[in-house]
Length: 156
Image (tube, rainbow, N blue to C red; front, side):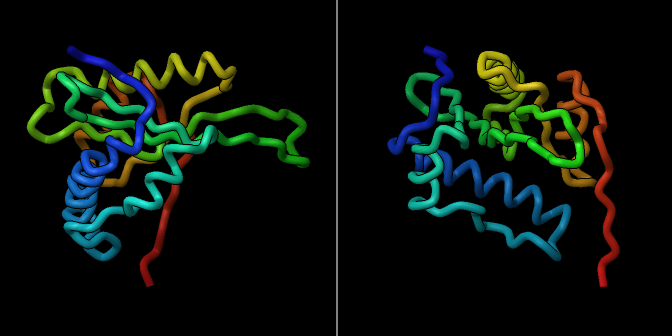
């Protein structure tokens, strides 16, 4: 049985496994910044993230097995320079287990997240894709995202 729901503490070990897969992809693209086998969150940090309303994490389950996740952050833009205030749902990380790809799980997670953002009156959904992660970029373009801004760097 397929289900998407907010992450719970019982999902931490599965999320750690998926976080390692993401880090592995990033380490191949940017070994200067990422170390293979690591995760950006530990178990305690995940437990804290899962509790907060402004950092929702959604998991995709198939027969109670976590096959994907979507880490989000709700960001309020109340810039004094720009008179328009708005709320953004930022997708910090979306991952589908490498053995489960091709089953439209990423699309289902993304669409669930979009519907959630609409339900809490977000103006937009944003995310970042590392240069060189062509499969992720192609996926997000297929989902209808377009470039909002470009971040550039010079390594010193």
